[in-house]
Amino acid sequence: MSEASGKSRKQAALDAPLARYAGYHLRRTTRLFLSDVAQVLKPLGLRMITFSTLATISGAPGIRQSRLASVLAVEKPNLVAILEELEGRGLILRERLESDRRVYVLKTTAEGEALVRQAHDAVEEHEERLMSPLDETERRTLIEMLAKVRAAASEG
Amino acid sequence: MSEASGKSRKQAALDAPLARYAGYHLRRTTRLFLSDVAQVLKPLGLRMITFSTLATISGAPGIRQSRLASVLAVEKPNLVAILEELEGRGLILRERLESDRRVYVLKTTAEGEALVRQAHDAVEEHEERLMSPLDETERRTLIEMLAKVRAAASEG
DNA sequence: TATTGTTATACTCTATAACTATA
DNA sequence: TATAGTTATAGAGTATAACAATA
Image (cartoon, rainbow over all chains, first blue to last red; front, side):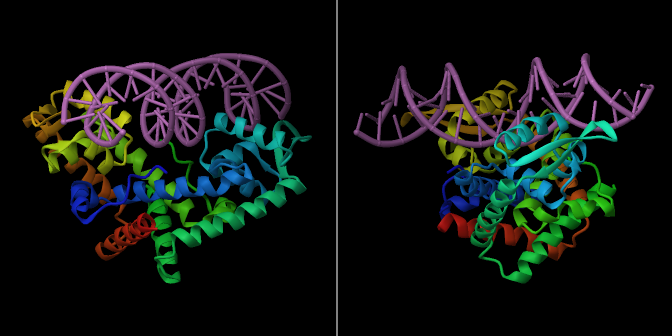
């Protein structure tokens, strides 16, 4: 739907100046994953970011908005509309914390839980489909390498 | 500059609902690479997309605009401004093809070549820095796995 | 003073439809 | 009729500054 059309053998050589960079492959592959998962989540009325948000709240009920922004690596202002959308659809609840009335505490509703479970199933199917060229060991290795690269960067 | 701040051990568990997905790690790692490489290219007056464009033209002199769009996986309308920018800076030339006056043929100028060489050096340093947690074999493996995943998807 | 969440805003990236000029 | 490149436009995603309420 968005990635440039499949490459013939003739065409393949043309990305040579970029193909030696891991960053190039990361970008292209991420784009593939993003556009595919968007298709998969669309029928559920979710985008990648609304799914991630819902899944994180579901996994950490009572999380605060500022903490959620940090976990999701989203700027706080950009989280506002996302939470309004989820709240408006009755998928999450936002409650003022009595001990500190500045903070909102977030949790999923029953509907939110039901939807996030469906969404996890859909995303797992999508992952299984896209990752099928790699065996279980390779998949783990891939994830470990990516996590390792990020961990080193966040220390630096 | 943009990725959420480093994770403490306590914090790490919070991304558990997403961390099992390769797509999650791809997105986060790609974001890290993109924001880092943007910093590296900025002093040269280049963005990721202008660098990719210049590097691809340099590696395939005489390439047509439509072909370039397909190689870069950029929609044709979005390439227009990019090429205007590069042409305006005297980094590339656009020549009408006499045999088919609809098409533009692209090549770098001497200035463009000099800049793209500098940019390659800068990007290679950036890659070396970010990929340093992985040894040579791992780096190759990573790139191969990513390419394999995309190749399978574009066949499907 | 500092922090939580909000508003307003802007810039980049990506995508689509419709146009023009050539073929 | 089809193709190359263009214009206009719109939607995501991401980023920053400044504000109100609360601590």
